[in-house]
Image (cartoon, rainbow, N blue to C red):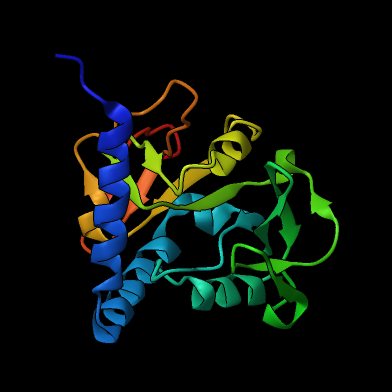
Length: 194
């Protein structure tokens, strides 16, 4: 019998959306604090000059406080902006310098930043697996963007512990992250950064 990987991926997405929506404010705040503490101790992040992150939606891990600290320390912070079928990295100058996209996501205004100059990307996802592959909302924006980066750009998945599963049944065009940080653990996928 042939396995329908598309339906397995769709079921994973819907299960994780439901589970994430069930989080209490206290659970979210506690998890976010632990995740941001861990991120601040990762050597690739400490040594990075340019960090791309994300504006949280739909109960994703909110890393905005971490971004503010990194920006105040002199690092360049970028957020994604959807341009057609692609993601552009754009310098973040604070939430007052963003607009809300048709997807309901805060996006920075300004010119696109060269992807080859990005040192670290904090990657959101609905589900990650033990090989670093992720499931997002299914449009492929992040996979296309991640494939455009330098080979030594540190890609770090950010999610809650329950969002890490054994297998997301990746497509060949899916791009894995090097590291995953949750409120309970860190998962090393590729160790050339340490």
